Length: 238
Image (spheres, one colour):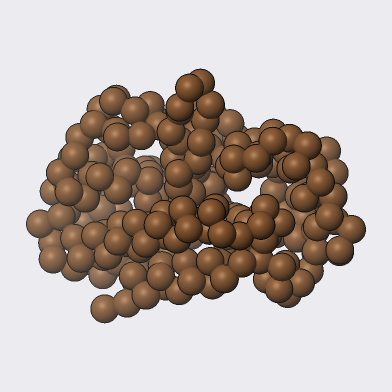
């Protein structure tokens, strides 16, 4: 992780959850929030560690990881629609899961004591907990998606959500890491990315992904993309 600290602007921070806060809540947190740059593939937190900060991605994308029998499995993906340490909204101080940066970029971080103190504000607590509810909904949706939908459809959904979460249509992501995220072998991942390239939805070269036809990619993606996008949008409403 690049520990360099960048300036934070409360309004239009780039994280949709922070930007949905009330003016009063923004004023209260502005002096305590810092922006850092996270590098791809670097862990940001390990399970069982004390949570010192709550992280709100701006144009980075982070994965929540479970390791079983030495294999890493993604159980959640967080970008500019949410925050990483959801358990902190319910008083937890230790990380339940490990997290790793999936797509390099900026993240706003807030000290956990400041975050949990702000939970005394009804509007702040409501927004954070509604957002955790949306994350839980999407996790359940992804479990069903993994059992029901093809790898091609799931990959299209995953790339679209990564585009939304990072706020850009180009990002670096090698096939090995993408395979971990989708829990498929490298050969299958290569076939899927080659097929999306052949169809003209994306280009993929030296781990650099570009979405060139988002409309086509949405047609290929499973219904879970629209469902989860709606869930997060609704979580920001009063």
